[in-house]
Length: 91
Image (cartoon, rainbow, N blue to C red):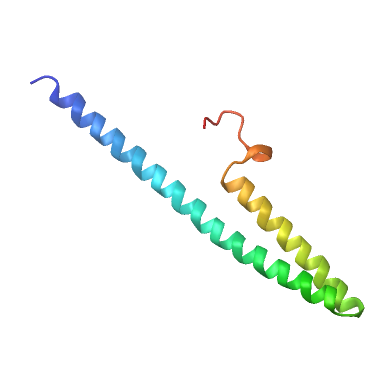
């Protein structure tokens, strides 16, 4: 049967594509977890800084805002959402 060889090649290509997509999904989920933690701690720092006094409180606010921005940017980059979408990406 001549059609068996292309079927085996197709199966190999499909398995490789599935593995690549699962790896990509795992990476995205990992960075989503890291971003969620950064977002949580950033908001915690902002809240603590707003409730405090002095330069340390201002530092908490600045650092917290930076963490929130970094968390949102990481999500946009990893999930390839609008401002960070690659030119050739198809969705």
